[in-house]
Length: 543
View 1: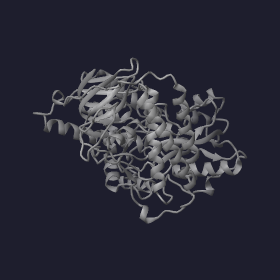
View 2: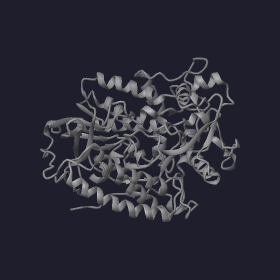
View 3: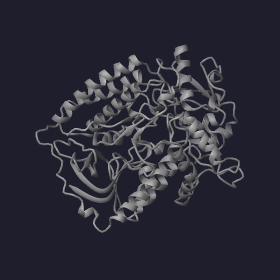
View 4: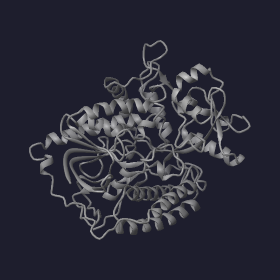
């Protein structure tokens, strides 16, 4: 089946839904999401959104904190733009019904503080900020007559001007246009053609590339992989942020303990009760995430312990239950009372600072293709994302991209309508068969994730990276052979995507011959001025 829209949004987190709402009054919008609309990383975001809303704070302070965290790789112009427009984006969320926590006097917003921030500036909805934002956006999305939501639909590949079909093979010229995407309906296995005047990649990050992650199961780097296959430039994929504190429990899958626990006085201790962060940073628990994650990794390797412990039990119990109601109740489910005892924690893959390269209007190097949210590399985060700048970036770039997409639609209104998009051939899978070897996909998936955790994790080495590259190359060949012989499934699509993103992470990590921000290589433990630049990759020209 063929669908024609003015805007095709792939992904249903804060970035994609914000974009969809902002353009829906100007044209028809399709929101494609591979599970339910509420299944996104946004839903898991506990901490909040960074914005200067206190007279004691300033844009200059927020800018300085962001640049310090980014360790020399941020784009200063981008940082300034994002920080200065943050308060307006927060007001928009309030206007659509997001109920942020108020201060004790109920006279204004409660502003928290997290690692790397010099002032209290984290707007939050208790400890379920992402859920509050997602629910407000979804309520508006489903009520809008111009927005069609396609749940349980997964994008397979982008459609470009130079697409020549042979089971979705993408052949890219040096200048290209995006016309939409091939999308599989999971219930039927049918692959539909979605054509659009603007296509927006907002699929989130690739946390599931790693064996241990705070991310939901949908985080398989689909947008990054699709963009790269179509010829979009990607950058800085060596900068993978590992969140320092995920609950260590066999049944606590992906359960993150928010940065705000440390912001409210939580202390990291080893198994003997010793607080150790003073050994690694004068900021102690409020150091940036890369410092804290490496410190925990180092302590665990020194002691041989399975975890360290996050302790906030010295704070008032009523305060803990009020400030962290979700965390408190979830920890009880796993047998831990955070008002009385320390919580066992380990680092886990959390956020990708790199992604598909965009300009300040979220445009990629492929015309009519936008990237926003964790899928994108905008220049804001540099070598390490400052806590709570992620939801902020998604909001700001959804706004920037929506402005540009609407501007382009209106400028070309006379001739550019969704009815005048080119004729695109339907998906072709002649000669393929249903797979009877699903175990191959499951085994390869696990192999990639363990390979990446062991060889391309928090601390890296040239030897581990070379070993990872050799194995990833072999896995890529195996996946390609499988892909061409069998009908595509969601599992196969996701496997293909995480393999590509794994390869890109390894390539970027091998290229950077220094340690900076989130990338630490024991062979090059110091920063080097000549590497104060982005690592940019683009798929070679095919024909």
